[in-house]
Length: 94
Image 1: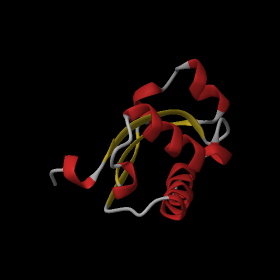
Image 2: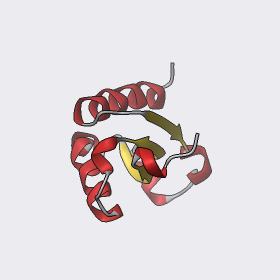
Image 3: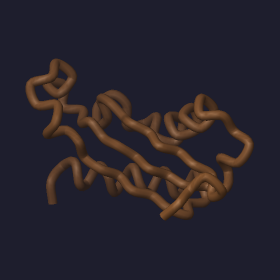
């Protein structure tokens, strides 16, 4: 298991603690940013797709703030950059 796989397990645990999850996908996109100045710090680039009823009625800024709050202990050491796709169940099509 790589360090980023271990990190993603921790991210998932924190997100599950903060949200009722109907779907969660975490991808390591660090390889796409090799040589990027932020990559040198050890923090990875990740993409998250998350579906939760808690996002119902929230705009995207509030959703992102809630996710950043749930993952706050991982910035900037484990997460350098984060792409977020956050949806309510009504917005999600599997």
